[in-house]
Picture 1 (cartoon, rainbow, N blue to C red):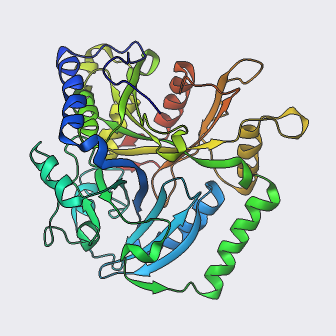
Picture 2: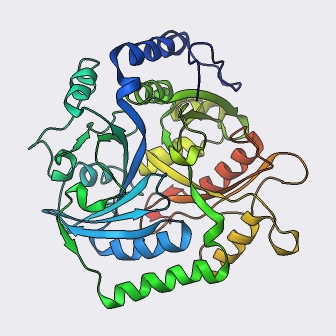
Length: 415
């Protein structure tokens, strides 16, 4: 796909600083000149970590709520791993959990700093892995641009320095990692995650029943893949988070919109080389428009900033695209999927927002935070080939609903 970064005009009404406008084209130019644009490809995997006792329940939850299915599990030196696939062309999902609840690394130390994260010290979205060619050359190139990487012995979890893998240290702005690999994530045995684990008969039966639910109910064929991944950051770090991410991967700044009702902005970055975002999901950064201490004058809503103060800088939700179309009786597919999941006991934050009639538009909804991953799952149907990525009204409604579920009161921690 031909795409000219230097002439593209980002969409949206969010005003960026002179600093942002100065460095965005510089980063694009340096990416091209240094070879990053050619060395780094599409997103190959996303990585989640959960509590030791939650890994299998999380697998079952992913079967029910997403198109991901188990491919293989492994026992490593410090962690158990499970690799899941949704489609050979889409990123794999690596789910990991420490073997011991007493394991300590940057995840547990970071989580304990925040009131709504400390109860699950090992639970965090880690980051993405991107396809890459020469990892040594890539490391040298990015280190010259002040990107830091973990080396063997730097981390308590050796996963981050496995042969064939290269990971940045957690971002100061998002706390997410960016990884690179030339390995084939559709071949889990090639990843070197540890000794192969065979699921017990009971575990295999639970996964089979979860898969049957998706098939028998008719929702499994409608859940396609990940549309986008949304991270929440602090107000003053929005531009830094975007520019840092664009330094490391061949994405582009698609645009940003103010969500005035929620005193925030939504900032979208996409891969220019794919014809379908599910092959390399968009990366969204959301931030308050004003820091909390300044907002105390105006007393505007600030669910985004509150989330970061309560949970830390981290991924807020991952969005699953629902096949566009009508179900029996004229019900939109996303309504059918959500209603079916509700009957299964999956809790949601609010009703489906947006309309899909004769014109291109969006319908979408947030689930409640998973008790296993702390992530919200969004379901989104892009009706009639809608290509605007999101609508401001929908985002405002979803942000408001999530904010009601992410509150903290001293001495009384809400789910």
